[in-house]
Image 1 (cartoon, rainbow, N blue to C red):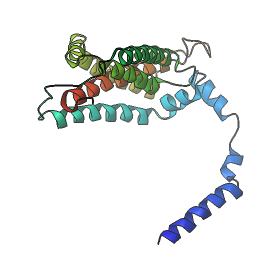
Image 2: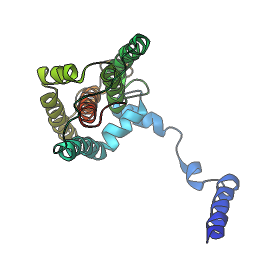
Image 3: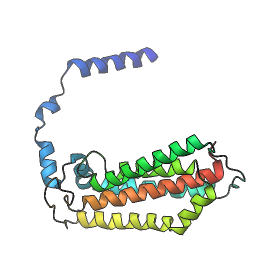
Length: 220
């Protein structure tokens, strides 16, 4: 049976290498330009995601929210660790916090300018979550938990999801913000707002997941 799979795989590779894709010849090379003109942003990927795949993006946000809720539910009945081992040596702390600072700055840049350059809301949220994770491995879990509770991060996460869904629905029914000047920071209608909302949601959700895993699973 394995020889059949091997022969099928080789045939597929030969087909890809030797036979051209007929659909590629039919594609209009200006399709990217059309997406840019339609969305009002220079990042055509963001234009496709937030205009042509907005339904899918809404459910991606909902699935991420359900994943965080699932982590909380599965770990709720487990006893938390009494001792959490973390990085204590000074060089590791300095490097981790330097990396966290850089990741946080990259997150802000991607959230604000994601509609103009490679990146976007999800990439910004991942960068923000990375910054939080780097701080968490060198800081007290009680201190991180205190900041999370003090700033009402869980409530802000839920609000960002609700605002994103409302803004997405407004876009889907045909109500659009002015596109502005193509290539400008204030352009793309509602897309910069959607980018920022997704970044906030992903970063805060990552923060919640990191705190839960540290509390019940530890770091090292």
